[in-house]
Length: 375
Image (tube, rainbow, N blue to C red; front, top):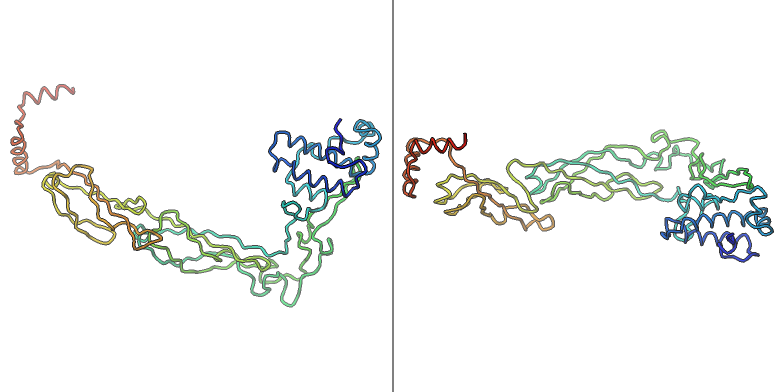
């Protein structure tokens, strides 16, 4: 049989306060959320059994005289408080001690009257490809929570104040005592009447119905920087919901959706477009006007360019978002378009070119044989 005093690390004449302190320390070390050792869960359950026994005078006296078997024979439940599992460490300390008071860095019951930061908000905006490239300012409208101007966030009607909660006498907590075969079990919970604030409102503010906040439409000018990409987020500090109890406002996050372009394709700070040229332009070269983000620009196509090759227009791409003066390139991918309909003059010219390259006009009999191969 396990020695409960040894499990808690206390002597057999330890006081209740020493037993409680030892349990707190051990619980912090052995709780499976903190301790990832394979046997941590089992040790934590044993720790619960030891504390439950030694913190109760009747059970402790029986255990000291007869051991764990004596507890069973006396009708006590020896499975321990965590036989069915256990929750968050804060919940455990709340049940056993009525709050842990921030002991050991786990935090205790949060103060509902403390300043609380307002919620962050999200706003989705759609802009065109060119607007994303060079930036734009847009007015946006959205609903957010503001501190009620009539009660200044207190929730109480002007000229009145909150009162101490009669159910918990301002503590924000109530205690429930449950009788069990193991004895009386006291559990401390948040007061349902004041929701833990310790205060109640007799006359709620008519403007906000006691909430201390009202929903209003807000309009702001948002500056979208040049070079912004799809799904980029712009943070507007303090643009979210108002804080509670004097806490700071949350932030507004504007998510930018950039419409795709039928002409431009973007990769980082570079943009790509396709240019179709004729075979004679590919052979001889040419100078062609193409559309860029900065308007039409002349592009020199070198003679003998191959299908899929590209030419670059330096500095005609998208600006770097943190350095607008620095820009990417405009890359022109060349496609050679083969004509499907020719005039008689064009047919003669291609025929002459074909013959110059050593070709011969195919005979009808040869063409028939070639076609026959694919029948």
